[in-house]
Image 1 (cartoon, rainbow, N blue to C red):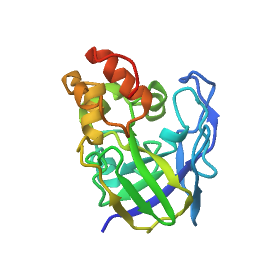
Image 2 (tube, rainbow, N blue to C red):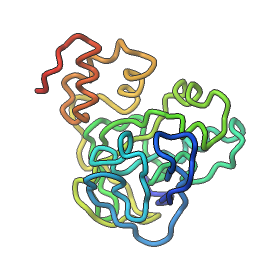
Image 3 (tube, helix red, strand yellow):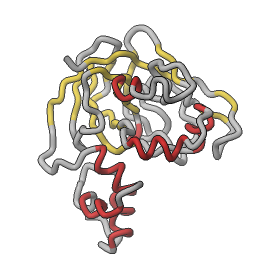
Image 4 (cartoon, rainbow, N blue to C red):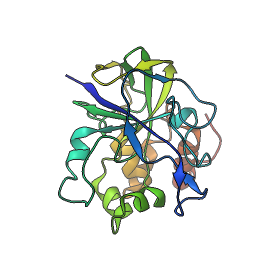
Length: 217
């Protein structure tokens, strides 16, 4: 069964490793139902702080999901104790193939409807928070980045809620493919150009790098 192991939120704390002096990356598990809604900016998760609004948050990055199985795989390879929210995720899932989730795939979780939008690309704030040498390279090579989600229908979610896939686009381009295309495997970029469910800036980047032009479809 695919379920939520936890819902996690972060409060702003000072940092020297971001374009802004505060970060909400330190997510902690919260009890009870949590409201999800489409944000104009910032987080779509009630009580969750997103501070660097240039690079994070907004409708295409409203909620961040990471698989507990992928998180556990780092046990004994990093210094931090493995716990839900450690990688800055809002939703820690069990039994969900997050890396294999197709762009535009929709999940019914609690009373909310969520849509897979784009993978997480690691940044220096993430690396500094974990205090792991060579973290950006290591995380990138692992190629299990978690998925950002849009909020299609607002609602409430809580630990133990099932994660039901209610729609999966036929194009088949998944989170892992997009992540590798944007990082270690640029030969995959042509696969991204016509995926309408990707954020516009991601498609524009793919067009520019492949010489396919910059005009949106």
